Image 1 (cartoon, rainbow, N blue to C red):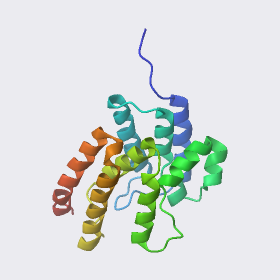
Image 2: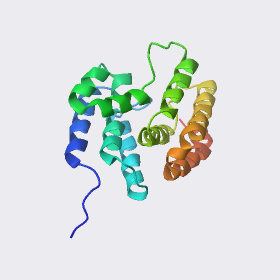
Image 3: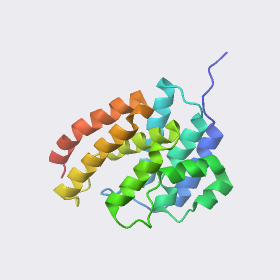
Length: 187
């Protein structure tokens, strides 16, 4: 008997289409690429993770990975996500969302980390995958202070959430170690 996927392709495609519509026209910062590149990168990290570590709800993980930025970066509300995908996915995405009403960036980060520490392991792993995806060559317009802050926050994410996944823990450590070299070689 052939092996079957541990997640639903239909649920993947439903979330992917929703995310593509929500992020339509957005570009990945510092590039001319569609924002969907980031969404795909985070999803790929989660799918690779599911091949090497067991998780209770792969569909939840994949859908939340695909939808992780729709509340934060688009006009989609938590209520709308709940209507379309259910309460658990809406809550997972909300846990991954930095609250816009908190104006101070440091407080916003601290609030987000506090909520993620209380989130299920599946959601914590998505944050690790998100940071792995984001540790690419920084946008040309970031100054040294912004770059240093981003690297420091990456280390905090690893320290606070790294136990969610041994596999992603190693991947994030590697990305953090390589990040200074990417900074030195940016155009």
